[in-house]
Image (cartoon, rainbow, N blue to C red; front, top):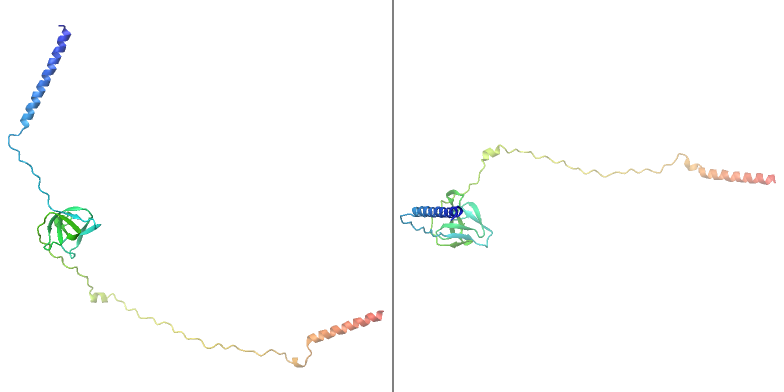
Length: 204
């Protein structure tokens, strides 16, 4: 057998030995990781009740208590699911988990949601104090009232009847016994015409 063949056989045997050693090491590591004590079985916690907003409403109000007397703290949209925690004594209101508000709980009107699961009866929060209407101190308000005296409107007096003066026709003094000036001009014209006619006839 030549030296070359011996080298090839030796290399193959060495490679097989390395692979077998790695397999033994990996098997030993796997066996060392197997626990020797019993492993407790993990079981899922059954899900609680859920309230689903009905599709008949675009959105519903979320209040801080089971009544419209409580302030509105948010809204839920149609089809939204949220964990339900309890119900009011009459069952008209459902308590839900609502993060972001005081205590992390709020209430919705039960006819507007579909309840999946059963709920216990829970105590409602204290009734909110009624909102007070701010009042104004009459004594303080009287200091800012300014009396404006009424302004007397000017009276209108209609004018009296308008008197249109009439004047008699103008007549020149002494005009009653005088000959009209136009008639004098016509007479002079006639006299001149006859004088011209006589002169013409004489020349012939």
